Every structure is written in structure tokens, then in C-alpha cells.
Image (cartoon, rainbow, N blue to C red):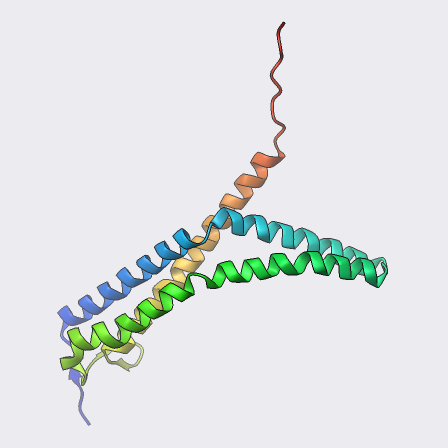
Length: 167
């Protein structure tokens, strides 16, 4: 069974659509979820988790530990809701692009393949582009958010200069 090579212009177009989708989804995610609030929640969760670990190590009463767990659960729930909120918008857009737009634009190249790691058709090429670029963007955003969190912690740790009041 022979396969037809995919024209380079089509490969570039599919990769460009994948790149555009990835940047659009990252933009939407950043607009729908407040990164600063997410960092605040994560800091509170980490603090409460440390407190709970310390309580377990010193054999604190179960009521005290369960009280901390009750304090932790709403934060974890809010964190999860905020993380999944963008998926309600991003996933349907992905399915529309993947199943409708690509078929309309490149359906005539159904038998054409591009040899990347393995022979891929136009939909697999789009998926691979989005997956690889999405992983890279996630790592970049993670590094950026950690840097921002450290900057915010440093700002919060600095004493606020007091202004002298002259009468």
C-alpha cells in the first residue's frame, strides 16, 4: 500500500492552524482564570498541608486534623473548578477545528501523509502540533508563574516603609 506525500504547503498550513489554536487556547485560559488567585489558593493549600503534616507528626487529635481537612477541601474544590473552567470552552473549539474545519479544508488529502516520527495524516499532524506546542507552552507558563509567585512573596516579605507624620 503506497501513500501519497503531503504537499509542504499543506503541512505548513496545518502546523500554522495548530500553533494558532494553541496560542488561542492559552490566551483563553489566562483570561478565564486569574493566575494570581490560583497562586493564592495554591499557597494556602500548601500552608494548610504543612500544618496538617505537622499535626499528624505530633499525633494531634483527629478532630483537630479533620478541622484542617474541612478548611482545605473548599480551597481544593475552588482550585479544581478554576482549572477545569477553561476546558468547557477550549475542548469544544478543539473538536470543531479537529473534526470540522480540518476536514473541510484538507479532506481531499485524506490519503496523504507526512513522515514525522511515523506516517501521519492531516488530523494526526494537527494533534501532534497542538500536543507538542501545548506541552512547551505549559512548561513556559509554569516557569513564568513560579517566577511571579516568588516575586510576590518577596514583595510581601519586605517591610512596608512607614511615613512619618509631621504636625
